[in-house]
Length: 200
Length: 423
Image (tube, rainbow over all chains, first blue to last red; front, side, top):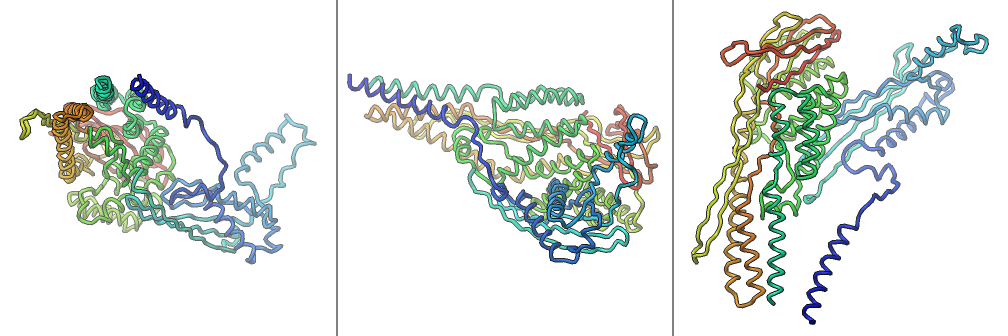
């Protein structure tokens, strides 16, 4: 009788363990993370965008372009930062983050190059008979850019089976559209090494 | 006591039935047959639809094969002109293969030791990992995203460095003139003529048969030419495919006990195809004949021969383990202890059954071509052009034509066209 009960208890214990394993761990757990926590390998990460933005802003603040002469000028972003890396990086995001900070710090007055087509289209429509011309936006008030912010990102990568060494170089320049002169430039290097565990 | 023995036997038989049932059920190779039959008939759109179902089936039945299935679908997608799907799939597969590269899964190694290699997740060969990037570059370029193609060119060269150049003579056989040529024309399109020259020089070194063609390219680049070129790439034929070689039998050990011995492995065999070359027709006029740029089939066979020693050693170790399990189990069955007898019986049955149902690992990237050919037309008028291939057999006779493709050659740039010929 006792042996039978032990056998039954053993089988029940096995089933309970299997049930706990299959029932446990379901659903999705969500946790907010910082940009630093998103750096999980040697590839481009949100943390790198922040580093580039902060470095370039600090450099511009301490340079001659942080003066009334340039604050009054109209700046624009180049369409994209040239990407010479081996990753599909959205370089427009880097430029827009820098532009946002520059505008909020009062360092530059930007023209929205991407909205230009929309603006021109809207103005043309408002000049047509469909709109009350007295209330339409006045044409001929668009401000041309005098300065253009452009840049390039490249990398050197050395990869092994379990090691990934990646070195980024990001350069940014502020160029006068009239003369083509580079009014400000700086670069930042970001290096990272990722080592995979032997076991997965 | 009798109940305990019966319970142990029942558990072992259940486990055996489950794993042997899985062994005897449809494999990854069986599931592949459906879309491959349609693919071999060059019905790429339909093959893409069937490959969707293939990926779903594989993910359900053999999840360790999911990413090789996605890789196949990605290639089918390029061949059918579905570039967004191709990019998504090839990048997914590439990411996984690179993530698991150089790592070991203990559970997979254990199951592979006791069963066979088909239980372990598929790990792409270096040749396969290299080929993913040029195909991605072609897909990006074909969909009009030249910046994406540039990034994939950079990834190609990182891989060439990692798998070929960094390892010296040991991996020279992996040299890939197709990957280098595609990289070179992307450099040319960026007006980086010096970088393009470097790639042409490297092709000349690793593929002496292409030396004449590379010399012409190098001469042309000295003059910093204005580009208005059309390059046609053709994936020709079928890459070698694995088949099973099996040595299974039963014997007796020194004590006279019966054992099942099994050595099962995969061997490559070339697959025949009819089209050996192509004439390129641009806007109804013959532009030239294609040249063989990369003998991918030969590289696959070489790669296999280089790795064969390690593979056979693993097979022998596995066979020895299974034989030892049977012999050990049979010895334990002679014990006076009933628990040891039951365990011995379970071990002996497991050893014999797993040897009997062992399978060779026949997985590989089967939608790859046997060779990549190309043809380049210089000084083509900028604008849209209609490109068609005339298929030639081994004697140079015309045996068919492809559908026409419309290609854009931008002003001062290179236009690229890609064809897949399987027959």
